[in-house]
Amino acid sequence: MLHFSQNKDGNQGEADTIPTPVVIIDQDSDPDATVVEITFGDRLGALLDTMNALRNLGLNVVKANVFLDSSGKHNKFSITKADSGRKVEDPELLEAIRLTILNNMIQYHPESSAQLALGAAFGLVTPKEQVDVEIATHITISDDGPKRSLLYVETADRPGLLVDLVKIITDINIAVESGEFDTEGLLAKAKFHVNYKDKALIKPLQQVLVNSLRYFLRRPETEESSF
Image (cartoon, rainbow, N blue to C red):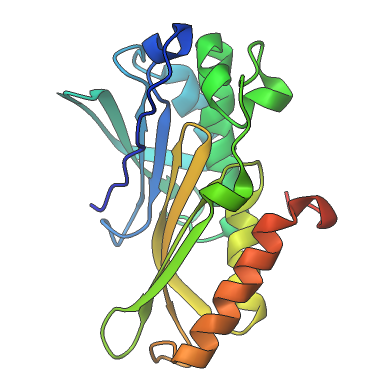
């Protein structure tokens, strides 16, 4: 599974002792389930409350496991829709999953809110610094075979971002096949497999997509949130 890591800065202080919260929503690695991975150093427990909150969204946790590495304890869940037994495809439900997990993390680990965009609205400890959208935003598109392209977007996180990204892409008639959406602290990093009429995006269409995304991401205050 492709995983994007966040660069650490050289700042010293209390924030350095708090691990970076990471939530990965992976639509690529399992054809039958949405895979969610949650990491917050070694501070997370069994996440029973998080699993219950996901069930309240009409989801089943069909598999759960935990593994350890140098970055901490990784909790990984495979999720399907309770009514159909299939993986989650709806962007709004995927965003609801992401926000539910982040809200639970803030509730049970208030210190995490200092490193989450959601903490500015709901956390006891708000982020000390805001991410500069101009500096943080990076967009690339590359061919991924003759029938699809790979879109990578990195930008400042905010609630509703996943839904908005998918809407921008589909509004110009580009299809989203699958992808992965990572929340790493104050940053969001997404990769989407996309196509236009079952073909990779030609250069002019790539430029249209990049321009549309840049325009929206740099001017979020002029848009209404989709979530």
